[in-house]
Length: 150
Ligand SMILES: [Zn+2]
Ligand SMILES: [Zn+2]
Image 1 (spheres, rainbow, N blue to C red):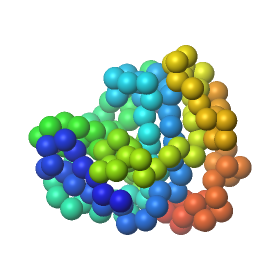
Image 2 (image 1 turned 60 degrees about the vertical axis):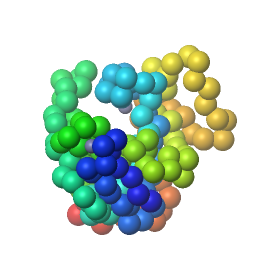
Image 3 (image 1 turned 30 degrees about the vertical axis):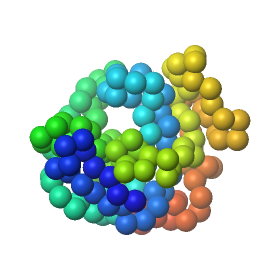
């Protein structure tokens, strides 16, 4: 899968499927995107191959006082991925894929702040806040995460 920013300066290729896909309905994601939710592909940083450009890290404040590092195209400023204090794992923004329909969420998180007109599918897990990855991730994905965090 390939994707990039709006102006084309940043282009990336994912060298494998993501480990897991979040659809996050939290207030931080709503504010950062100016939209109802964000789609994040969780994947090892070394599986995000940059084809062109160099995303610029910007530390963005979150409601809990922490910050989240969002990597943006230095020219058009579109956010292509972020990390949450663990640079080994990237959260690639699904909307920046050339074909966003190629991925679907494995889980909906922070549905406590989901906008009321967003209807969730019944066959995808949804949680009020967060969840235990050990309970929901496929075994292969847990092994990949363990490998990259060790
Ligand atoms: Zn750009
Ligand atoms: Zn969120």
